[in-house]
Amino acid sequence: MNPTEVPLVIGHDGWCGALLRSASSNFDARPEDAQITLLVIHNISLPPGEFGGGYIEALFTNTLDCEAHPYFDQLRGLQVSSHFLIRRDGGAVQFVSTLDRAWHAGVSEFQGRQRCNDFSIGIELEGSDHEAFCDAQYTTLAFLTQALTRRHPLTDVTGHQHIAPDRKTDPGPCFDWARFHQEFSALSGSELSRAKSPQVLRFPD
Image (cartoon, helix red, strand yellow):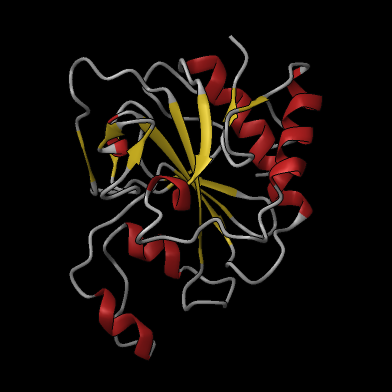
């Protein structure tokens, strides 16, 4: 299902009924007092630089065949997830309810706050640091972001590399922050504002 052809609504249970659901067990409860205020954008491809297939979904659902490719040997026993994945064709999959804590950020910090998983939602874009993302991905990202802002008190959006700069490089130099800003603003009718970094955008109050 193309997420841009039907309204995207995040339900009271934190699931978007219009998206394919592939439930992951790699999550736990957020702290009781956690406010979901941060959106984190990532990129992922498995094997690195190769697109298509079901390897990402398999990784997030602990069903990856580590014999299928030499690179996968280093992923044995890894338990990670994200709330959403947007594929190259713009199709989107949800793995974890937005009410729960997906395991996407790891050791991280945003504006002095540690453990970003506690208060963030993670969106993975199928891609790499070395190749442009697809038009359909930016469109779906804008629609999904709009739905998330309607459900949760999001204040900021940034990249994984900006909350874990010593460990991560995604979404990388090929992610067009200005393009994302433009598409979200056109869709929502409201402008994002820039924080100190051009890769940190603030949602309107």
